[in-house]
Image (cartoon, rainbow, N blue to C red; front, side, top):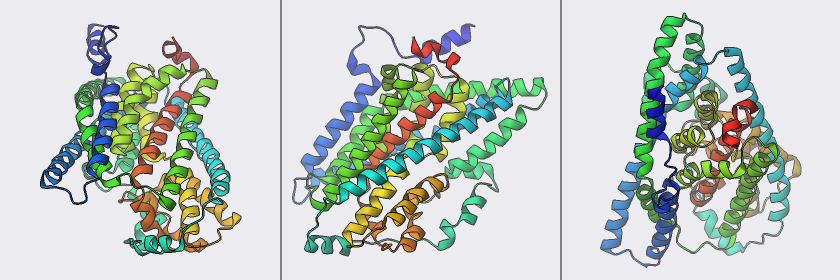
Length: 436
């Protein structure tokens, strides 16, 4: 009806061919990223930052952090109504459950493929790395890590954390996975109540989701400025002196993530479900936001918007599969766990056996869905693993310190794989508009 037409005019991107490319959100955030990194690396050449430089960086840090917070504040209010509408709004709850099972199947398939790929390629690649003993000694001396209590990383703690005593507090704390599980429980229960109460609630949550999409559009309109601020601070910290072992680690990590990301585009192309060009266009805003913020969750609103406007995916994909993937699926762990273990072994002169490397790869798959909600949780989850295979735990401190640049490409892979799972779990008959 007229409301749907108004909503399309409000949320859909302009199709006027005369529109300036600079008005595109994707172009704006890309320019912000490139210009910010260039300015930051230029400022890094100062031996001692001037008062002006320090003040500029402090201001940009506030601007960038404020923009990240503004984007993240939309995640919970957007995810909850989308999940409820995506699950309870379907005609068949069993079909929604089947979609969820299919999504987990794709997640496991991608994880296994990436784990095998990274184990084979990176083990051969690291054979060419020869380190200077003096340089590695200085690098090892900087390794510091605050290992959390063992219980913080235990299976018991993870399982109990999935069942929040107070779902409202869990949402306020930003712990998305417990909120997602509670929302799914609520949505499946709502699907079994009488039509009157169910339709009334669905109408409310549809309106909430539509409203949050408008808010997301406003936040993304400021993306160019936010990404520029974040990229400038990042570029100033990294500088241009990425050499030796650190440079090798960066190159291997980044190249493997880019190959895996390209592989997803190949799968999309071969599947014939959507045009690979349309898929690429849909990924631009989420990819650049993800690389700038280094957060899959911060990219979720942009993914939902692109999946709705460009790929024309149904509510089951945008309101169920995408939030689920963003919450529990981290394809990057199948790569950086293996690369990190090989790097630390090389750094400390330890021979990492094939069996131990296989254990690292298998752990990256099995533990993928249990990353704890604490800073550097994905890294810290490897502490017991490193102990069991004889790698120094303090080496994880080095990996955390070196994670800034690779994390941009890790997030790129994560958001691309999330969108791929959403596309692959959508029935072909619902993708006709996206292929047109």
